[in-house]
Image (cartoon, rainbow, N blue to C red; front, side):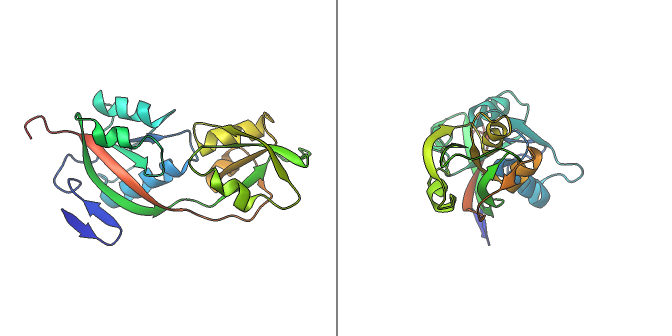
Length: 197
């Protein structure tokens, strides 16, 4: 095992080359940014080989089917344990990577009620109460499959607000109404298990 600042390398250096990375999409997720970071540090070079999926489980299926060589998963994800326990997968390493800034965002021109419906991925839900301006309260939390999907809900006005990342807010043309902050996150990298090991 190799340890360098911010990295735990159990098989990143000695395992398969990073040809394509699967992670949670759509565009604008923290997972996409983490995959880009991994690609920049350890990938083959050239245009990033990042594939975005609707769920981490779909990214895991893509790994098992050979569509990607590696999968990146946030350790805050409630079901990350299923990847660690899967005998067909190998934990290749982990790295620290701060997420893009998170904040509460609104679709321009949308009148925000005092008690707002807020979309968020389940993992960062605690940030809603931290970042929601005092003028508003939570009427309902609606869970989305990613921070980018949460931004899409606010853009379509299915919710009043979204807890989302700066890239997702930009992609969905949302405006922040709160302060923003990153999350210091540990990211796990998985490859296929070596059948001979």
